[in-house]
Image (cartoon, rainbow, N blue to C red):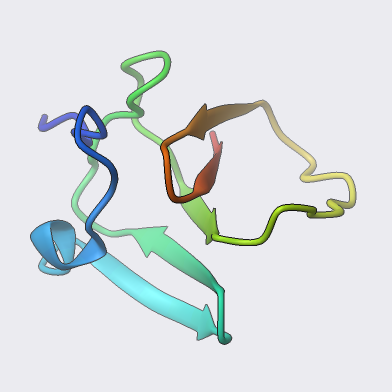
Length: 80
């Protein structure tokens, strides 16, 4: 199981073969993990990935455990 590498930021194109785009807006993306990639924070497989370049984000109750990862350009919210 490959772990998402965020050591030099996050490039969704490196993982597009295993991530399915659910929704994309100007500065956010919501993706499903079809390939079983591991979370960069905890190392466990995740279900969904939300990527945001916004400075502020508001989230509802994801209904499951989640991890947050911050790169220089974006915040990643991974639900398990």
